[in-house]
Image (cartoon, rainbow, N blue to C red):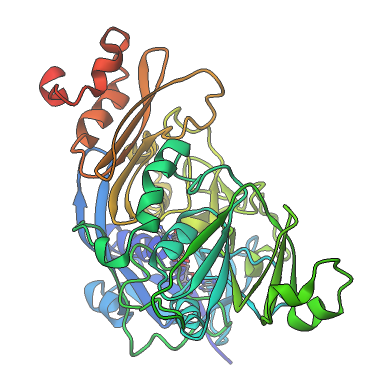
Length: 485
Ligand code: FAD
């Protein structure tokens, strides 16, 4: 019979949120025992953390064996086993390996999994972790045509990186990359999609993601429970299909998937289409615009669903509309002494006018770190204020080899008609957009090496009235930094 451990802090999840939370709490409370329970054999650690500006941060992510954490923090133990049961009222947790825990404070950082269009069709694939990325690569190597569904970051990267295979990209919006960009930015990026691969290699710095190939073949005990991939997930994985010199991309705008057929279902269907004209394919996708495409397989990149399953039964968690565990401004769920951070949670506090939650690497780190500080403060009965990082949304990434910086309400989210946009664009070089409301800057999209991020971040944070500058604000002949000194 496994022993029942009494522990002060238990963290669930070996992704960025869980590991950051565990490290922070272990260093802040060195005399308390901390347990990190994770379904994946490797943990994700943040390295080379760099605060680029007040809110922008960059870091590398490395997958490491859990012993690395245990060596660094003598009070931290990592258990590689998925949690299968939580009884929140009893502060009791059970892992699949039979170990049980009585905790004082628990933080759930179990991430999210891809929303898959259909579970039944073997020709539909989601990309989430190292295993699924490798499965994708394997299938792609034999594919002549794939259909990509979705318009977020993963779809964007994917269609850009795939070579030697025709890509049909179906998006429900009027422009590509709607999660991150407006139509103008999409227009700026489209030529990169059409450019030859050899002409694409602009140098660009960004967070690197490394995987330990020796362990990459294993997923957690419960199957699909590996950590989410992150920036540069496709680096080191050749995304090449079976066709020489063909990487044509065809975009179907403003449509969704009506139905996905296996070959047999398609042949037996009563569809009026001339089936033979569509060729013979393992799968067929019918879009809401009426078109049907045959393909080798479909990639479903339509967002994620928080991994809450093992925690809900018998407990009383308040869930948000997106099914995340709703947390307050101390990262507390509705169950006492249970906190949550990263992709699994949904911010339930009244956010700052310039911040929104997005399930991104940076926010997973920030939330994990802040949740640990909240847990420690609660144990010590000390007050704690919402961290500054939740004041302004900021994200640095790379799309189509361009550096991309997003600040505040970069897409005028929630502003309705009450905003003004200023745009400056130099084809193939940079795209700069600022969002103003009442003459004050509330958001910006910076694509390319614009060097404007710090100045704009300041202008957004200090909410200076910029009305009198008008379009001069983006005049390329004015050194804006000097202007506002
Ligand atoms: P995860 O990293 O998913 O970790 C969850 C952990 O919980 C895992 O270790 C898992 O094993 C464990 N777990 C799950 N269930 C249990 C259980 N029952 N018991 C114990 N352990 C459990 N973000 C960016 O900022 N930039 C990008 O460019 C970017 N690209 C992405 C590309 C891809 C293909 C994907 C899938 C995601 C991308 N993201 C990107 C998003 C980013 O990876 C996630 O937001 C981030 O990793 C979330 O971290 P997390 O710690 O909350 O969850």
